[in-house]
Amino acid sequence: MIRGYESIAFNTAPDSENQIHSDDMAQRFGFQGGLVPGVTVSAYLIQPAVEAWGDAFYHRGAAHVQIRKPTYHDEPFRVAVTAASESQFESQLLNPEGTINGVATVTLDDQEVSLGLPVFRDDPLMPEGYRGAPASEARFQHLKNEGCLAQEFHFDASNPRTWYFKSAELMPKLHQVTDKSVRAFAHASFILGCGNWVFANNAFMNPWVHMETRHRHFAPILDGDTVRVEMRVVDWFERKGHAFADVDVSLFDAKTHAARVSIHQRAIYRLRGN
Image (cartoon, rainbow, N blue to C red; front, side, top):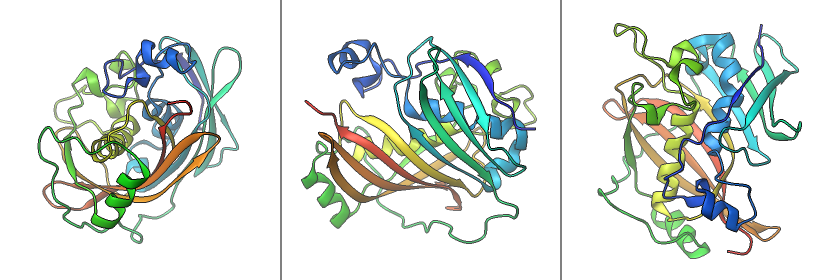
């Protein structure tokens, strides 16, 4: 059975280069405090899939996640599961007042995914310390025309900076290092975080807000793995005073270049009034 749960939100990035996760910057834009990252909220919404389907989710699962309202550090929350079947459910993350901060539709394919695999392009790797030009229509046009730089990220399940709760014990067993003979699986916060990092490093943004993702798994990322992350700019537009950008991100095994995850991601790269 696919079940909801209750817990306490954890700001995994208070010292991020994206200062929307800091109290000072967030309050300048009218928020109560630093925002819990959207990728962390996504992990909360997806967690019932990991508990119910186990490692199968990281072989053939998919999710569409939308962030609607801010979630704050140390804020109690509840993930409610609705419209559940054996291979699909909808989830909502609700704050103590009952406000829906995020929603997700999560699915598990009946068969192993064999079609629609992202193609490895061997994009040039980003030099260490590189920072792309500030995000703008001109920058996104340049990246769309000329291509983006790739990055590599290493997953270390024992590093507290990779956890999406304050304590590893609050995550599903699949994500914990409890037995050295069994490698922990990378979770949505890390996986979608790879998309955030390559996005923000190709077009510098501060502050910016992760809003929505559609992602699909083809094979798991395990403790000790390094992934190569490639990005392609899809679109950019304005809505209600905010400036948005859409990108496609693909994660590959850094050694074999085998596909691991595909992500379609939307973010506000310039907040209204900035």
